[in-house]
Amino acid sequence: MGTLAMNKDNLNRSKIEQWKQKELFFLVAYAIVFYIIFIARSLQLSRDHYSQLYGLRQGWLIPNHLNDMSDSQWRNFRGNLPVLTLVFGIFTLLANLMRAFFNLKVRGMSIVWLLFSLAYLSYLHGACVIFILSIATVNYLLVKERSLQSDKFRYTTYLCYLVYAPLYIAGPVLSFNAFASQLDVPQNTYSVGNVMRYGFRWVLCLLLMELMTHVFYYNAFAMSGLWKQLSPVDVFIIGYGVLNFMWLKFLLLWRFFRFWSLINGIEAPENMPKCINNCHSLEGFWKNWHASFNKWLVRYMYIPLGGSQKKLLNIWVIFTFVAIWHDLEWKLLSWAWLTCIFFIPEMVLKSASKTFKAKSAFGEFIFRELSAVAGAVTITCLMVANLVGFVVGPRGINWLLSSFISKEGFPVLGGLLITFYLATKFMFHIDEAKQRYS
Image (cartoon, rainbow, N blue to C red; front, side, top):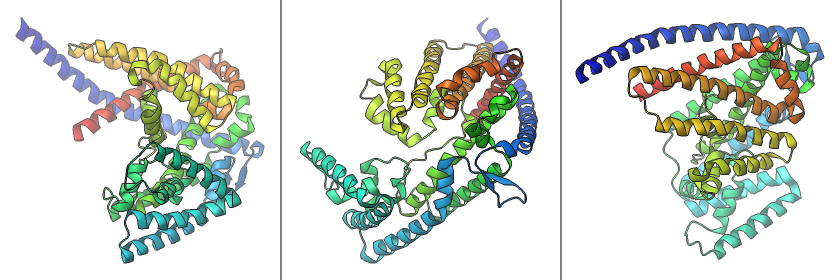
């Protein structure tokens, strides 16, 4: 009987694998059709409403096209990009020449970069740099009082760590020990060729952003409030587009500064290791969004607060802290608390899944389907939380929900859940392919 059952299970597995292959072809075809429709409608929206939008400037990439510069953070970074590139280029050239000629190690390189960084901070903050150095000095003295014994923990090295020019504005976040050790021995994870390819990929991402802001005015729709007058389908298109714009914006910001840090021999963590459209769980999403900050939070807050044993309570403290760290605004606190609420069912389901172990091919198939349904709900919750926190604020929650919980909105919501369900299954195929070829 046991042999018969095993043969039947193997036959079922074979059939499921054949089904997965057919499923993958369907998922690819669905994704292509989805994005064709999505892009076509996005272009139409931009063409029809550009005269009513705020923050559009004269474009350069495509003739007779305006450029969406409604996001102040992106506008400031883009406007200062030539100056930042020139400054970091000069700093990098001088620092590497001094390292090579004088064979500088931790102490020497910390002094070199400290001088460069102080010049940089003086330009950014003026006389307020004295205030920054005062806080840093007090903090250093407090740490030394705790009898921290380390040859590398000198005042100059510590100051250099805090104000290191390439990572000062936006990070990524790097621990002191990792920083000091790489001042002594520059990183060797990335070869010169790899660093150059990293920079080239960044340029391609920049061109993608320029193309996106020239033809899709997602952020301008959100900033002007015009999307509140549109249909539920169009609200989804703009909301989804805004979140992708935000992801690409932060990827460009963080990778620009990380690139200059890599050139100078300091490897910082990658902040955006995964595409926003390839995340189907809240935990996975936040591990891959501002990943270096996530590691800092785990090390200095999550574990000291009790780690996984008190996870349900920890998330409220941590996300509230993150909201306040960004800025003290109700919309950010709303984002934090909505995220915590959405985290609860995911944690319950993950805990339940650990006790449930599929013993047959059919059981694994059912578990996979239920996981895809859960992924669809999670993606929806992620969109709601992030749009509330970073776009519409708590006052926009009622409007956002009423757009989809209505006679006109219910079919759209159903279509979105089906789309996210299929997208989650596509992500499963991607994860399985990575496991096969890793």
